[in-house]
Image (cartoon, rainbow, N blue to C red; front, side, top):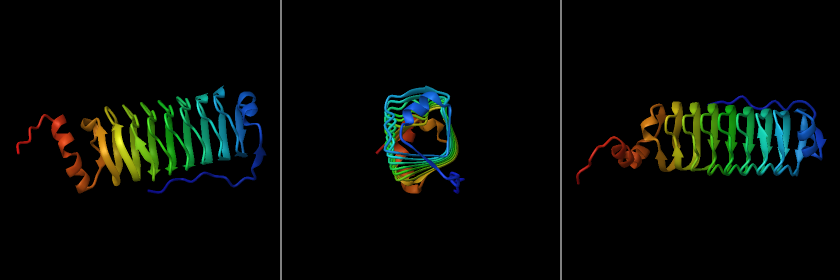
Length: 214
């Protein structure tokens, strides 16, 4: 699957005080943000476009209705950030910590997570299209009632991901390691390997009321 990459062709302006910009300016464009600390910052309806963020900290930030487009995030900290109803388009997120990130009711399109930690992340009721999770730890990721289309998990560790009431179209986890999945009644449209089928067969049987006798 090919994703549309972020467009970072314009010259970027270095920024030192990202917190002041987030609080004062609703549209941030063509910025280079390095080693910035925006932990706990609160803002609403902020737009970030065509920017490169390196080692930026947004832990426990509250950025409601965030619009982020054509951006690359490297080694950033988004732990427990509250980003409900946000929109992510043409984004690369590499080597970043996203533990406990709250992205319910968000829209993600052409987004690539690589080498990220996504334990306890919340994507309930979100819409994901053309999204890749690569080399990620995906533990207790909540996708309850989410809509996923053309989503791939590549070389990820998947444990207790919640798919209940989700709608899946061409969602591929065949190249990842599975410990367990929740919401197996909603797995139509999921692509798995034959080895994975054997692994989750007991879970499928239990949910379908099938009794397996020795």
